[in-house]
Amino acid sequence: FSAPTEVLDAESLKETPETGVNIHGLFLMGCGWHLATKQLKESEKDVLYEAMPVLWLEPIDNADLDKRIIERNLYLCPIYKTSERKGVLGTTGHSTNFVKYFHLEQPEDDPSQWTTRGVAMLCMLDD
Image 1 (cartoon, one colour):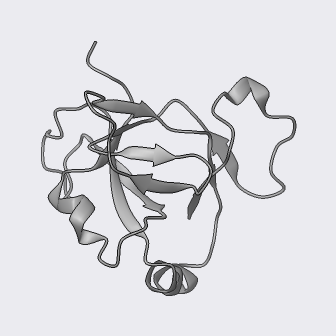
Image 2: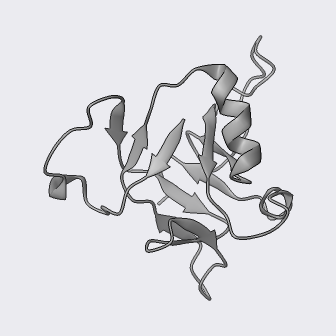
């Protein structure tokens, strides 16, 4: 399970989490990020990518995961290594460019609108 923090710069973190791990350096493509509410938002005009805050990855039981996704109406945001979003199809059924899904808060009734817009996170930018 993943949860965004309010910290944009990893250097600003004062302590490590008791469980899980913090990661940083990801970029959001296709929408924006509201730092105060920790939710997806509409993109600002002419902004293609937005740096994500530090993310906390928490190990949880898979049985709890589906329940959290439904209860909190989370968007399953794919993360890719590059913006091409393609690669060799692996035995898992996913592209070799696909890393994992992040579960992100979003304000809409139907999280599939973010899928329609192609919202994803990237490990690196093209430029």
